[in-house]
Image (cartoon, rainbow, N blue to C red; front, side):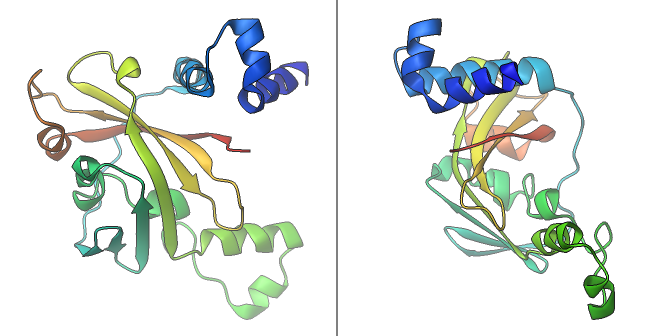
Length: 195
């Protein structure tokens, strides 16, 4: 419990973090927490790309079958992460195969908590913002790590998420959009809520 309280205070109160760990601003606190998160939570895995067609509705909306992904406050050079099917809504809310539709009777027989969880996962839209590359976390030019905010259905506060892309054919001078086209998603995990 004490560790959770200290963690909460560091994330939510940059003044305490600055005094105890000598950070100059909130950005340094978040970067420090990002490093600690990768150190403790990282497990390399290959996550397949979205296999069906992707419809680009406009600059901020992509349609993946029956689910819409809305993004904002993200550099246009990173849009390939979505248009190439590397990051897609089903990674967050599942598919009908993983979370089958329930009948009205089945929903009514659920506990309140089960019903809330079921409805949150039946969401057909996913919202992501502030996708940014974390250059200080990329170990080589073949690995790029990113942080973004995922807006959890039913909650006002977004959750910080991390992903890693690996492109085995990448060169040092390769542009980011070319890197993305040849990359694979090797890590995705949610971390803390923004309070």
